[in-house]
Amino acid sequence: MIEAKGLTMRYGPLVALRDASFRVEPGTVLGMLGPNGAGKTTCMKIVTTFLVPTAGTAVVEGHDIHKEPIEVRRRIGYLPERAPLYGDMEVCEYVDFMGRARGLSGRELRRRKEWVVERCKLAPVYRQTVSTLSLGFRQRTCLAQALIHDPPVLILDEPTSGLDPFQIVEIRGLIRELARTKTVVFSTHILQEASSVSDRILVIHRGEIVADGTIEELGRQAASFHRTEFAVAAPRDEALRAVEGIAGVRRASAEEEKEDGVVRLRVESDPGVRVVSALDELARTKKWPIRTLAERPFSLEETYIALTGRGQAGGGAGPEDRAGREEVRP
Image (cartoon, rainbow, N blue to C red; front, side):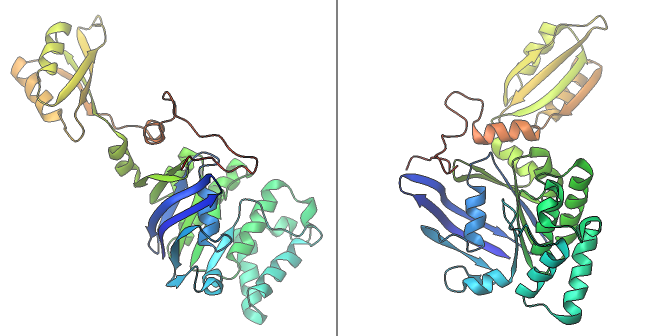
């Protein structure tokens, strides 16, 4: 379990993270979603005790990052943004070294090495020098060191970076499997990855958490209106006026009538106001045959754009300083 409270990180006038609070229960995969420079890595480095925050704290498996940093580290498997590898070691030497550094020995060390080599698909390069590995194998070797001691908490910063499509599918499956018994937090800037792996998504933008919830909950938070598709065999203008007269409808737009006499309308209603029943009743009253009547929730892309304000005037990611940190005006 992880519980973060008011995490803030300042670099002089730059605010890399501002008042971040969240909770991750065991058996949950939390995806941190945001553009590069949003503050995801900063947040992970604080939770793993690599950075001391300017303000706030976090508790990992009952241990405070300020008071018991060593105990926190013992309970975390961390895959950082840049793989911590020793280029002159063979993969087998590196995995063995990291296991011993984590306090493993004897039969338990052998068992864990066999497990990570199998699950991270390292057998083809096991006796290869780390410096000669491809980017994908370097990433998987680094993932092995995060898993070698079987930690209850996993913090994975861009875990699929550099992997080919087949490897990405394997790592996603491994994350889901590990989440049955562990708390997993991973970061990504890829929308589809966040939605396919995460139980919950934390959207971070310009150093602030702008949304927290499931895909459906994020859609509700982001939506400034509810969207419904309505297609009926009816005169265009008459159908448009009738729909616009329904309580809660903000606006309706209609395509030109097709040769089949069907008018297709996009109906926007107030947040939380569902008009499917009202539209169905309207069609029944007017005796208009219904061709389509369905709610059209926001896609993940639309949700993300709405939450971060990107694509709007004045929106988008803020400037970054030379160290790659995003600037957020205090």
